[in-house]
Amino acid sequence: MGSNRSRRLVAVLISAAAVVTIGGGSSAGAQPPEVRHSEVDPAVTEKVRAMSLEEKVGQLFVTYAYGRDADTPHPQNREEFGVDTPAQVVQRYHPGGLIHFSWTDSLYEPRQIAELSNGVQRAATSSGAGIPLLISTDQEQGQVSRLPEPVTQLPGNMALGAGRSAADTGLSARITGEEMRAMGLNQDFAPSGDVNVNPANPVIGVRSFSSDPQLAARLTGAAVHGYQDPGAAGVSAAAKHFPGHGDTNQDSHTDLPVIEHTREQWERLDAPPFREAIEAGTDAVMSAHIVVPNLDSSGEPSTLSPTVLTGMLRDELGYKGVITTDSLQMDGVRAKHPDAEIPVLALRAGADQLLMPQNLQVAINGVLDAVHTGALTEDRIDASVERILEMKRKRGVLDAPFVDTGRVDRVVGSREHAQQAQRITDRTTTLLRNDAGQLPMRQKPGKMLVTGAGEDATGALADRVRARGPQATSLPTGKAPTQQQISQAVQAAKGNDVTVVLINAAWDADNAAQQELVRALQRANVPVVAAAVRDPYDAAYAEQVPTWLATYSDKPVAMESLAKVLFGEIAPQGKLPVPVPDPEGAGADRFPLGHGLSW
Image (tube, rainbow, N blue to C red; front, side):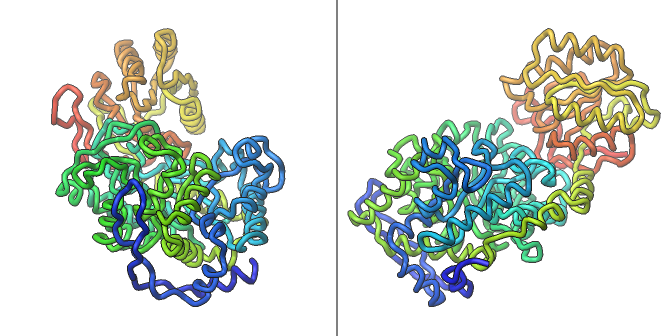
């Protein structure tokens, strides 16, 4: 399916590189050369030449639109875009891509998502240059999971790092990509190739595979292969966040983090996953809104740095695919420049795909004005459009942008995928301490309390305990329990044979009351099992508890694996993919990288 104009692009073959000089006239100063594909299929050259400047500039942008179907008005579209429906957003601005979130009212259930995808693709192929859209989200799995059940849920990158299996990582990504493609999504802003060497990192954490750059690299490459697996139709992967967001205690959504890695540290710690992703053929690499002074002295975030994007990513690492920015609404990239200038600086730095500008019309006008004044050349715009169209061609988007909505229910959340996801997750649960020999519970207790962070997580684990025979009560106390909630949990624990307490980011000062919850339960002299359901670092903060596990995820699939370990149905197989530092001893580890007990 698709228009004739779209079909003419199918045969695009882009390979060797040539150089196109970027125009001057920006506060960014002199610009490095732009890598340009030289062997372009004549159909692509013809298409780009036939497009208006406005259509080409539109292809550079990925925006969102509000609503669960393409043709129903949503008031937020009128407020932000001056039109009423997602289809009208596409028809007015001719964006190259559309990104979905729950907050855009776009993600309810699989068939609805598929119908929305078809609707916006009809709008794209029947207007402007007639080029189908990249439709995306960032379905990393685990902590960052945009797509709701029955979409198959997996435990995320750090859990996969604990499993150590490239095969499991590739299969996890393949399942995700196959289900996304069935719903009409063809680009996933994943995987995170960041090496999480800072336990206080507020934005990466369990989104990283490991603090070990070689393990992170191996699994990043496996994930890229899985997402882009042609046997599953495949979605475009985007390895992120270049040059590496793993060593910061600031969040680039709200700050402009500064990472002090030297060049040698970057080569050793941060670069390996991106080298592996490029070797694996990743369709895109996403930039980070961070400053790394030892790599670039300009003070600009990497997203706006020619030294980083062109000098390092293109010239040194030899990357020829699409460079996409992280969201241009994040404070990390908006700290120094007005919104009209940011996309221009990103293009001058070497970016191709401009994600989620604060104001789409202002951003488009900024790029158009830059071309008209000579700050950007139209040839520079063409180079990025060619790369974006090639990415669409490789994934079959140009030739077949529509999906069969009757197939969605057979693919998304299938029994086969659910079974595969459970087997993968079963290999990731990590036993950190079993000092009292409490696990496995060969003799099932009569009554169990499940308390701690997360109503969904405590409820899911309690359900799975009940399914195995014991009575189970769920008593969620949240990430910041009050003293009254702690007292209630202690009283409830005294009426049960065993208490399992789920801990989520208790290392963070805002959530430190969870540490007191664990200690209070232990002081009550009741059998307690503690499980870190996000960051494993929590296990160092309540050493009074002799039994600690890490699941790296609070998803139901992880709670099923936890229940299996508790009752001895499976042995814990996970090994820590990061060290757990001792908060009382500078430089010392409470649990080292690779630690994990079994029986």
